Length: 345
Image (cartoon, rainbow, N blue to C red; front, side):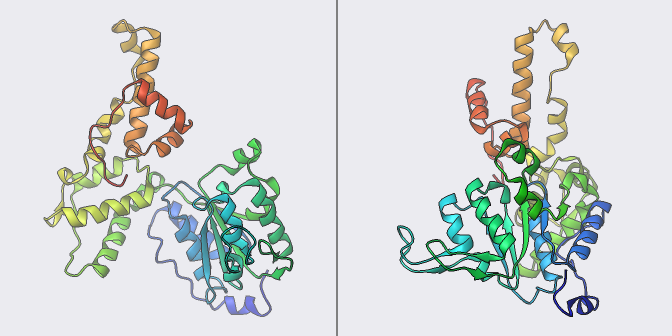
């Protein structure tokens, strides 16, 4: 598992995980797994919703490993078109395709002796999955348009917010690649499942603002504001909270954050929860027909999902487990309109 003489050296390594703030049992469990896997060279598949901090977890694993002196190279598999991703990973030779005016080194070579973090691995095309699997098995890569192979020494960390088991069942993700990546699974919990970390995270983000913003003093959050924030569902998770703290640091002029300082969609969250569905009794009491009740219930669900995702339709569709095009059609049919602009959209 370890390179020669590395196991002895690793026993004296100081473990640090300061970028992952939290005191909840859920976070303690994540940190404990990070500590264990950092001492190995095994592949780790990090799963969790968007905004939960999967890349921070990957960086913590790398920074506490014996590879920490070498680079950690990050590539978002979902942000690069499929036809370009192969070149990004493996590099290419001059003239191998239109626009390849010179040869290029890929991310695998850049990460040699270090760590390669494959973010959003669930978005990789099946064809490229085959080539990635071959590279991992043989520990060799071949540039696009090349005829020679290059040996690689890279630790693979990957992450996804998708259900890869479902993707395997649908035939969009290779089962053999899944087992190659998922040697050690690590699930990062959403903020709503670690809400006891709320105050610690707010302080952590304010401390980062203090370090970069001259003259900024940390703000106090009133008990009423904290109660509202604790009851909020946080669909954007840690990233959404960090954005909110950033906004409040700029917009709130007093030393204390009060409920009126919070965005309306957060402050009204409790009210929206009570309105999210049509009660069965009201259907009969008000003489509402079945079709009308179903339509009202659908409209209620869609509005709630849109509010939770700040009217980002793709994210709302994911929350509702439906296609984005289907959601857009229903929004048009039901004449659902956004009444106000939300931050962080």
